Amino acid sequence: MKIATSAYPLDWFQDWSDYEAKLTAWVGEAAQAGANLLVFPEYGAMELASLDGVKVAGDLKGSIRAVAGRVGASYNLHAALAARFGVYILSASAPVMEKGAVVNRAALFGPEGLIGVQDKQIMTRFEREEWGIAGAEGAAGPLRVFDTDLGRIGILICYDCEFPLLARDLAERGVEILLIPSCTEALEGYWRVRIGAMARALENQCVTVMASLVGDAPRLYAVEQNTGAGGVFGPPDRGFPPTGVIAEGTLNRPGWTYADVALENVRDVRADGHVLNLTHWDEQAPAVARRAQKPAA
Image (cartoon, rainbow, N blue to C red; front, top):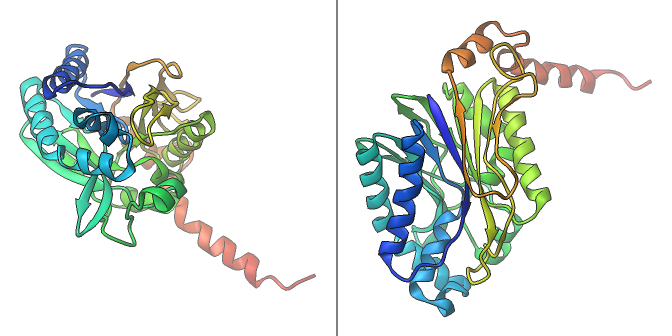
């Protein structure tokens, strides 16, 4: 398959047709390039708050309500574009009201429509302390596995990819592609997520796909500054680049980054790679237990 992952800049819209035109152009460009799977970043939907004006878009509660109120229409547009171009699309995540709380949710669409949604599991300090976004301990739905014609897909939203056991759970359920939409303000945040994405590809002998918000959006609350790039990573093993970097975009340059990916390579290294990280994962616990039982000198 060909994967397209985005470095996505936020825009200011005067009306819904502006957003529709932007998304259509992005999806159309990737489809024209032959992409089968398109990945948008975390909190890319925050640009929808611009449709309610400067005061709402610059306010915490106002921007959340505004974006959450337009998620349904956005999903309809994504579903229509996936059908029109015959592609799979991971939507930019958005704050969504769920059981009286706010969750950070991305949705996966295929040519036949909505496949399912994934909520972020572990919140950053900003999301906890300022936004009040609910994670796995609250209203967020569980980690899900999405069976598609392209393969078995899992989604770890930004910070989630920095926690190995989340990716491990998905890998144990047969996931071969991990999608990692991200939103990072500073360069160190980008690298935390990228290092996490590359580490998860190594540990689970899978492909990870990172998408980023980029550029400045001073009128949009909480996403005023964004640093990142698109990237596709795999295990440094037979059939993959020795660096583990299948493709990477230029930092802070908007646009798509493309990568050709063959899941046969994932299956090959999992079965008979130079190393077998996925298979040997469970050997960690006995090794630690032996150390704990060793008498003190």
